[in-house]
Length: 232
Image 1 (cartoon, rainbow, N blue to C red):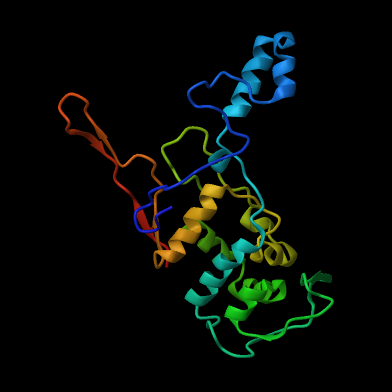
Image 2 (cartoon, helix red, strand yellow):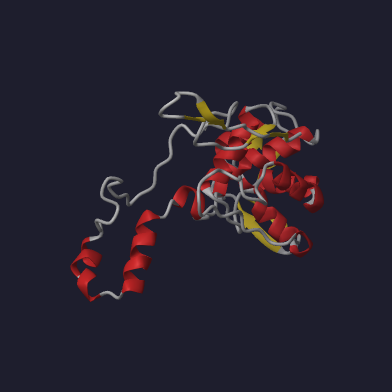
């Protein structure tokens, strides 16, 4: 995605199929049993093959989401990028009686700046930042990044993020959200959020069609406008 325009430069899913022969089944097992399937079952298999997972399927983003927590914390003035020794990883952190480990709990990262914490993908640092941001403010950033709504890309079948309702988020839930777990978003939502950071806080609507040319007059039939929203 081009962060400045929202143009989708590449999008791919797998398993794929031949766009010139969309009804040719690519799964060999399904292909072998095709004649025995009912019309409803055949339609279901075709729809599954054609499914654009980049916009229709959700997943747990994990550590890539630490960029979102970092952005919110920096915007709120809670942290700075390169303050040496601002954080200290002991291998884990206790939240509401639950100990959440760093992935390198067996050899803690020790003293870190925010930049180093991102490089190390250190969970406790981002849990701590999430705590300082707080549930209400954190959810306001989720909204600003477009993670609670569809991106409105002009393609069919788009899904949106799956998050707990704000009033259901306790200390442990906020902790896990802060490092990218226990919620789901689409790949398109994630790339749009990261592009917002790259575009200095301006979120662009993703687009796959820039303009349409009339085949007879060669004039623009339509120019797609790109909506933007300030995220900070």
